[in-house]
Image (cartoon, helix red, strand yellow):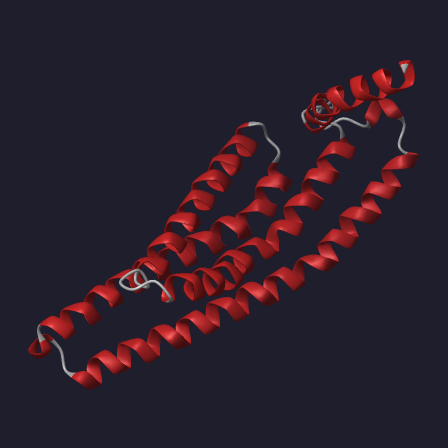
Length: 197
């Protein structure tokens, strides 16, 4: 019974220990945070590819709600853009430049997607206006806009997929660097090593 209680206590303390480790500013913690962020390079692809397809398939079945898909995806991109932008600013203030540099791609990706979905929302509004007021736009112009945005979406998703694959070598480099850190003396395993003259 005591063993079970000890295990429960250890599990309760685990989130606190993990949080302390990631805030410790040791080189090990920085490596692991960097690796986690590099794994998140696939997040823009997942949000704008997979979630868009699933959400589109669900909302398409409900009448008058299919136009909500780009609004919801735009909102999700906006949330991620805001969160990761805040993280970059915090890391720059803490002089953790490598982490802010790693996060820069994610922020730029979500910014690109956010702008794209705003454009798509306006395209939907234009299409709805065309249905109500056919003289507002010619059919060829509307078709050209739809083709342009469809091509733009495909290009954006292909880029996101390619960049997520491009993170693999950087994960390997950080993993190798993490391994080399095992041979560095403990007193040097901190990000905040004072510089002596």
